[in-house]
Image (cartoon, rainbow, N blue to C red; front, side):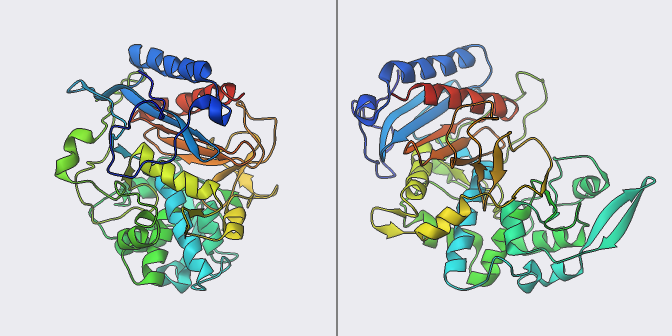
Length: 407
C-alpha cells in the first residue's frame, strides 16, 4: 500500500519526521505517483529486485513515501520505511559537503595540492601503457583538492576498467575495510595515476582521499567529523559507517545472485565496524535520513535554522566544474551532464534520455540507491534498493515516473 505521508505515520520515528503534505497540495498527482509505485511493484513481482523505498518531496514537504517488496529475500521480511541501506557512493556528496565546510573555515583552498595534507602524494607519476609495458611519466602539475572533488585527479577505481593501472588497483588492498584511512591514502599514493591531473574525468577513489584530507585538516576521524558537523546537526541519527546489531532486522539485503546476470552479489556487512571509514562509499542510511540531507541542500545549505555550508558555497558545488575541455571517461555522466564538486549536474535541457531541469544535481550508489535535487521545480526524490545490476535501469525509470507526476 502506498504511503502518502499525511494519511499514515512513517514506520520509524527514530529520526524526526519532515513536513508532509498531500501530493496535490505540492503540485503532484496522486494517481501518477501511484502509477510509479505500481511500476516498481511490477519489477519486484518479476524478480528484478527484492524491494525498494521511494520518497518524493516538493516545496519542502514529503508528498509520497512508499515501501514495496521485501527487505530481505532470504527471510521474506517486508520492506519497511525505516529500512537501512548501504548507500555506497551516496556517501560522496556528504563527504564533499564536509570538505567544503572546512574550506569555508580557511583550512585550505580548492587549488591547494593534496600533498600539502598527505605528503605521500608528492611523488606520484602517471602510468602510460606502451607496447604492453607500463611507463611512468612525471606530473605536469600536482593533484588539487578540486581535482579530488570533481574526479579529475587521475586516481582510479578498480572496477572502472581493466588497463594496467586498474589491474594494479585490483591486485592491491585498496578495497579492504581492514586498513585505516591513512593506510588507504598511502596505498593509493603509491600507485600510478591513469592520466595527468585536470585532463580527464575518471570516476575514482578520489573521495576516499578527501576523507583522509578531512581527518588531517580537522584532527578527527572522518566518522567523528561527519557526525559532529553534518549528521548530528541534521538529526541524521541512522546514518554512519555501520549500524548496531540491534538493527540487524532492519538492514535491506540483495538477492544472493543478480537476477539478470546470475553473478554473485557482494555487499559489505552493515553491522561490522570497519577500520577504514570510506568517504567514497562506506555509509549506511535510511530514506528519511537522506531526505534531511537533501532538504538541507535544497534550502541552500541549511535546515531548520542550522547552517551546514553557505549558500554560495553550495552554488559552487552544484555547478559545472569540467567545462568543455575535460575528457569524460566512462558512462556515469549521461549526455547533457557534467560534474561539479561532489555531484553530477545537468547542463542541457535536451540530450539526456530522461526529463529534468538545467541545474538539477544528483548522484547514486553502487547497490542502487539514488537521489536528485531539482531547484527549478523545488523537487527532490530519493530511491533506495540493494540491486547493483539494476541500478541504471531503475534510476532512469524513477526519473521518468516522478517527472510525469508533476502537475
